[in-house]
Image 1 (cartoon, rainbow over the protein chains, first blue to last red):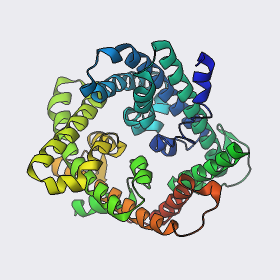
Image 2: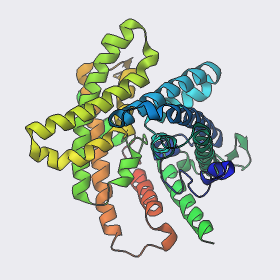
Image 3: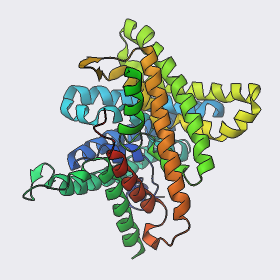
Image 4: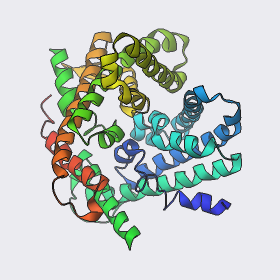
Length: 193
Length: 199
């Protein structure tokens, strides 16, 4: 498999959100605006790339029995790194995303890529696989965030573009489920065509 | 009185799945049949309460005194993962019947973000009762964790009931599977919004 296709398969063919339906909690919880979705996506991408890289380097040394716990520890270390970096440099975003930053540890995408790809492939390929899955996840989050922000507050990346009141429910919990549901329908339709 | 407030707020108003978006993966994954949903709910109530007990003690008697709060994520997830494994082993030995019922759900719980989420909420968030904000004490934390888990069970079982009916109707092809489940969950969340303002 060439390097480019490793990256691109995570974006469309194996998109974590729309195709694999993994990592639903942050997908629904953090996409109240396009910017928040983007921030969450980038934080997850960082963890995905580095944990994939490290896991693929040490996979040979870990006994099969304690494989999963060891992977989780590696992932948790990078999540802590992201947590501290965000707390220091983007405190406002850190506050908004709140609980969902430490919860990257239990995001099925991260452990899923570690188990399915990084533990069996070479470091560089694993790094790129993490990058691809991360880009796919970030794109999904940003699109969902943009849709919800547009419908819910009439804005795009914080720029107010629709006059008047918008449908607040799309910023609230029910809107997250409904918007993601219809986006998936759209994705299925486009993929078929 | 506080306990009643905690229970109502955790089960209905701030429902863990429909309002806080924790545990959505198992919510979508194991909600095809009511019996499976009930098994999963029971396992979550059990593990979440136990995990909160242990992580609460670790946070207050190990991490805080040693001033190593940044180790929270790593410690908690390790504790939860080993706890789940331990519960599985103990259950197998002392109660094979219960193990039969809950066994297959236990490994899934490690990556259920609801467990880690509640453990972190309990030690970081301040709650307001009768005007004063304070951290939860241990009994309150346990009641909170158990009610959060009950809220998860309630949402899961209602949702499973809805999905069982959905199998009987013709859903348009692009909506089949996850999309229609998400839209249904959205409508269920709308219904749960009716509880907001109670406490």
